[in-house]
Amino acid sequence: MRCPATFGEDRDFRILHANQRFLKDFGNFQGRTCYQVYKCRSEKCEVCPVEATFTTASPPSEERSSVSTEGGSVLVRTGPVYDDKGQVTAVIEMSTD
Image (cartoon, rainbow, N blue to C red; front, side, top):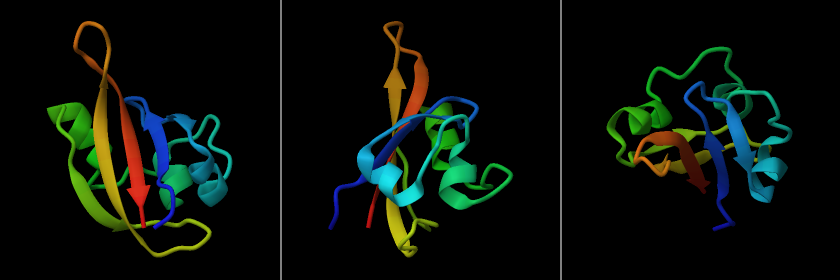
């Protein structure tokens, strides 16, 4: 297992930051959404663990296909990021192969 690709997103699914593994696997993310970078889509995924995390503030997990340079299937975990008032302001997503 490699180091997980990790990135954070806002409510509009724009990627806010990413680690080196994500950059290596998926490339530049500035100004782009997760579904553009991670799934090569023009629209949000129908079943979106990030949207579910914003809605429920609980971390869902699912296995889904990626479009990294290596392709394949990854396990995706998400988690809410809270502000000092306890509001979910972002979601972090971690993918492991």
